[in-house]
Image (cartoon, rainbow, N blue to C red; front, side):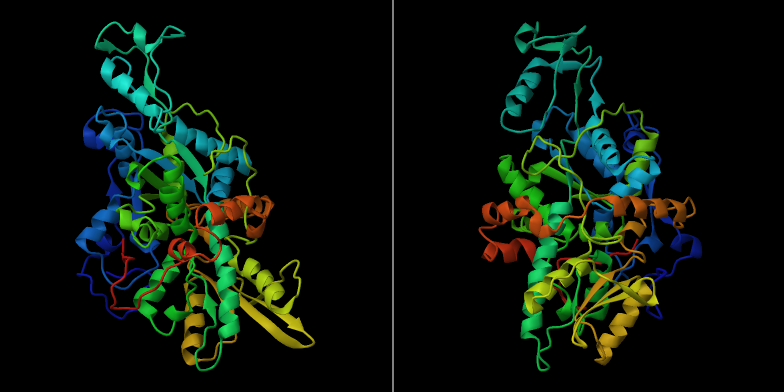
Length: 514
C-alpha cells in the first residue's frame, strides 16, 4: 500500500487490496463501546483516511498504530468520563488549545464572526458535562471534591440543588444521598489560543535566520533556512530526504510543540499541577498534527508527560458540535495568565498560515540592512503556491525569500537544493497547497475534496483578523523573563528549539501512515 504522495517505486507495507488502501480507521463512540446511552450517543464515528498523510517512508509499528488510534473522539470522551468517577486520582484537568487557522473554519461553517465562533467553540467545550441525576452519591466523596477544588481546578462546579435553592454540604442528611440535579460542569476546564506559541516560534526563527546569514560561507553554508513549523514537511525531510536538507531546517520548535511546553510546564506550575494531571488537546486544521503529537522532544518529556496528548481536527470538533444535544452558553477564550478580560483575537501576517516569511523578512531587512519594510510584496512564479519576495537596493538583491506550498513545489525546492543551484536565503515550506487554512482536517466535502466555496469564505474571515507583530506581545516578553529566565538563557534553547535526525537514525518523532 502506498499513499498518494509516495515517491517510492515500491512500498515495504504488506500488499493490500485497493479497498483496504482506501479504508479508514474507525473510531467507535464511547457510548457504543460502553453499551450506555451518553450525551453524545448520536456522534458519528470519526474517520482518518490514509491519503490524509503526506509523510511516507517507514511503515507504522503496532505501538505507533495504537498511539495514533488513541487521538480521536473516543479517547477524548474517555478522559471526560474518567472525571465523573469517584477515584479522583484518575481525574485530569482538560485543556484545549485552538490553532488560529481553525477558527475561520468554525466561523464560515456556522455563519458567525470569528469572535462569535471562538466563543461558541469555547462554550461548547466547557458545556460538556455528565449528569448525575438520580444517582446515589457518597457525601464524603462530594466533600473531598469540594476540598480538592481549593488547590486544584479539577471541579469547577459541583452543587446539589433542591428546587432553585443550593444547599450547603452541612445540610446533607446522611453519608449517601440521591442527587436530584447535580452535574460536574465545564468538563473542558480551559480553552486557549495557540497564537502566543506561534509568537515564540516566529521570534526564535527570526533570530536564527540572522545568525545563519551572518555566519554563512561557501565552506560551511548555513543558508538557505527552511521553516520547520509544518509537521508533514519536517517528517518528510527527516525520514526521506536527510542530508543535505535537514541541516537547513530551522531549529525553532513549531507552535504546537511550544504550546505543549507552555501548558504542561508553565501553566502547570502556575496551577500547582504535575504535567501528567493535565490532558492537553490541540484543535488543528490538518491530520499531520496528530503525527507531531507523538514527538517527545518537549520540555516536559523528562517528566514523563507528552506536550500534546491528543489532536482533534477542526472537522472532528465540528462534527461533535453538529451532532450533540448540549445546551451551549458562549464563553471567552482563556489565557495562560488567568486574565479575566477577554483579549482580542489576532493573527500573524500570512494569507493562510502563520506568516513566517513576512515576519522574518521584515526583521532581517531591519537587522541586517537597516531597511524598514512595510507591506511585503509577493511575486508568483511557477504557480500561486510558489511565490518570491526580494529586498533590493541600488540594483543589488540583498534578500531573496520564497514560499513553497504543496508537495510538487517542495519537490522542486529539494531538487534545486541538492543540485547546489539554490538562489534563496529562506523558504517557508508547507505541505498543504494553499497553506494551513486548506488543511485536510477542515473544509472538506463528503467525498473528501476541498469545499472551495467554504474555503474562500474562510480566507476572507482570516484576512479580517487584526495582525499583531510577535514583538508587540507584552505577554511573550513577560514569559521570556518569568518562564525562560531571559531571551538568551539555556532554558530558551531547551524549551523553544530542537534537533533533527536523518533517515535510519533514531529520532523522537515517529513516522506513521494511516
